[in-house]
Length: 176
Image (cartoon, rainbow, N blue to C red; front, side, top):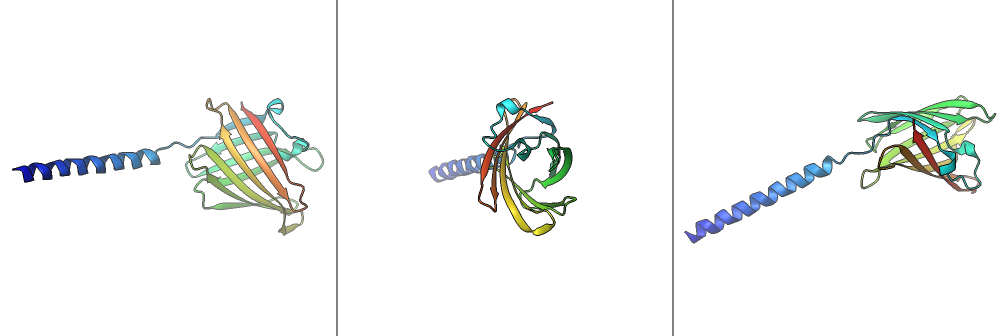
């Protein structure tokens, strides 16, 4: 009889352990990643450009996020100080990349990944010289985070130009 009780106890412990592992793994997969959907407008007083010009960051972002990708419409200043619209599509699977070609033959290759905790989006891209799409002019890494209330988007941007004059900016956007 003792042998039966010992085997029953082991079976219960094993069942409990397996159930706990399944619940933990399911919960880990259900971690919700931030949704950046919305219209975001730059908040200059909360941003830090150091000695970098303001045109290094979009002044407005309109983002639509789906389970598979994020589409971003960026309002940026062009070389003539005029507003210009750029559209970017980022795949959220962390493996794919998106290539975009601007009117001046500048190419950008985008790659996206999530931080280990799933709460920050990391965007990595390279940009070519104008009219020389195969030669990299600069490489950029960005980390995007939402504030806990979801009303601010914080972007840390690190740029490595091929001329060695690297810079970093911290940009805050307010949700409108």
